Amino acid sequence: MHFYDFKGYCSMLTDENRLDAYVKALREIITPESIVLDLGAGTGIFSVLACEFGAKKVYSVEVNHLIHLLKDVIKERGYDSKIEIIQKLSTDIDLEEKANVMVSDIHGAFPLFESSIETIIDTRQRLLTDDAILIPRKETIYFALSESESIYKHNVGRYLQKFHGFRIPSAERLVYNQYFSAKDKSERLLTQPGIFAEINHQTNTELSFERLFEWEVIEDGIAHGLRGWFENELSDNNGVTNSIEIENTTYSSPLFPFEREVKVKKGDFVRSYVSAKYENGDYIWSWKTEIFEGNQENKIKAQFNQSQLAAMYLDPKAAIKKSEFFTPTRNETAEIDLLVLNSMDGEMMQGDIADLLVEKFPKVFKTTDEAMDHAFSLSQRYSK
Image (cartoon, rainbow, N blue to C red; front, side):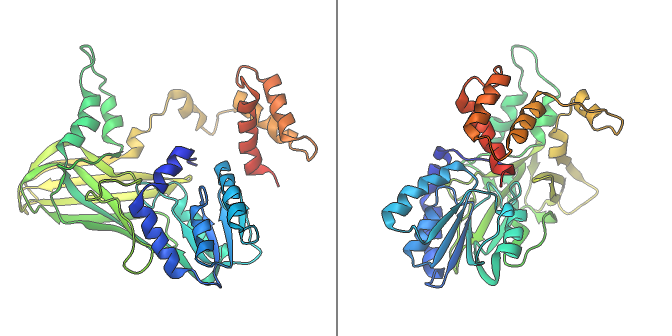
């Protein structure tokens, strides 16, 4: 699970396109009968706005401790009876009254970010009324063939060059099989955009997605990879995007590189299979691409088969641990967590647990604050 610091939240708050679009949606949707669930509330800006626009009740759900910055605003605005802060995972809560509006922004470069889609599905099914309005209501992911020379050189070429006369051959596998975030004004799209996924949050139950693209190159150029982006609908004719035309946005901009640049001409044919498979709380991306001269499939210019799986370095010890014959014993991290969990007996205070961690594991926890942070993270997850 990704935790933002205050600087990260400030980046979201200062993204005017994003914030203005959400303000517009909330203003249009909120009524005096609205019971709002602010999912992944962050510092609570959407919770406050919902009250400003007349909401009856707001549940501000956020596991990050920075949600408590909202308390001062609640007091100042007089929303003590309207906003309820719930510092837990949404999957671990129930509501006194189901919400009829949900607002969220819990993704990164794509809506497919960690467990975001699974969380939205669970929230819709358990915590919302059947006729609830979701903000955003729909998100669309696009891909296109990209010419992006400066981005490619900066994010691929520089990591594969020689360093003091030698290079690391195995680094190619790591570099070529990860997407990276970068934009440059010189980037061109060499094909029309293709839709990878249309996610209607009102009805969606899918977690994994895949698509076979077939493109015709629309102008001569050099292909460096596949550019991905999203567009969403917050309300009628209102949404946000991280497409290459948007210069300043808090959302990262993913480019899936090829293993080498490919010179293409107008009329060339491109076939690309892209998949995002959801496993263990996150997405594994794969992209398999073939580029043909004209529409002649017997004249292939390039063929790539790339996946984040290929970039996952597994050392021999980790491989052994996957065996059914491996006999596990607890390591120091397990002993630390076990101490915290056993101390959560309903009698020992969290500060005392932190002191105990410092006493038992002084090499790991140099200060009580460090120990408190660790005890707090486990307490949020496992305490009643």
